[in-house]
Length: 484
Image (cartoon, rainbow, N blue to C red):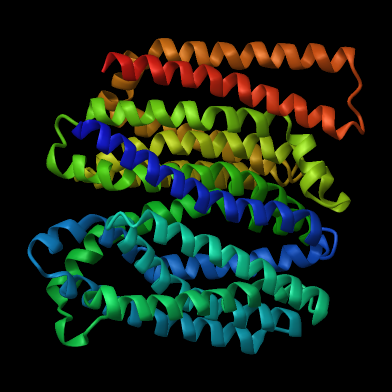
């Protein structure tokens, strides 16, 4: 009965996380067709470069602090010292915020366009508040408040979309409306965080009297690993925009960014929904029984496979259809980007299991080497290839780098990777065979029938593919649970 309760709780949590993921995805899918027909590729190019630069600054200065909450929350809670944990994190955040403000002010003064100035200002204010909200979101995830977490994410997506429509179509603002809508929706979430913290989690509100350099040193050591991995991960995902801007045009940056965003919105967001569900249990298992965690990790990887493989296949194989449906005609040339990026993010989902295990084993150097090597490989390939080839090659270099990262992480965690293959090799083989059969059938069907302009038939074809793959995964799921 105890296992049944745990399974039901996990299913309920995943349902909430899935809801909290689907709502933002839904609004992004609605937003893309509308606003890629309203804003130009050039505007998207400027916006993505500015927003991306602030993402790098935020990550370097204080976003990495959330990794310390994941790592030390249960330890400080058992010692009844949570106020100390969040006070030290608050002190480090304040220091980073001052530096970010100096960077933003300098950039704002030297910007030569009113539109760029507005994007800089709104982006700075957004990141300043968003990281505080993100700390709170980590807290409620650790407290297994799945419903609250996902309601916050859903409400934020709705408010953000509503504000963006108002600023664009009523106030007649240009691309700066995107940054402003992000900022104002975060203001409302921040107000809720302050209210909820005072009422339910008073330890979340920091006190500088409890700040100490000894605790900060501990957080800096562990956080530096998270900073390096997250920073290199960000470079893996986004440095190609700078190379495209260097060797091609700002318009190409905008086209690339919006095609990339479709894959990231779907694959990465669903992966995060899955990880948000299993992270509390997975982290606890790694904390309490790291030595015997491989079977548990393999089982989670199996669940990840049967949930994510169908979506990855659908977006990769039907990339042109998703591009046509979700983006304006000025962005159609980059449809191949969806295929490579979807597979890349799917591979990272697998690598993240072994990455977490290596971190809990204190094998930080190994994790850093893996991420830095993959990042350098991506940068080198982008520098060499994008000088000669078109901008879509950036997505291919991303796939090569992610495959390299997955192989390195799996090599250093041979016990976890071989354990997964040993325990679920048959299921993996049948899932791959099913995908190959579907590719053959789809190719054959495409030769027999012309689906051009027949949106309903193409949607039905995609839905049938997803149904077949999920049916295969569900059969495996039932068989495995009967055995255990």
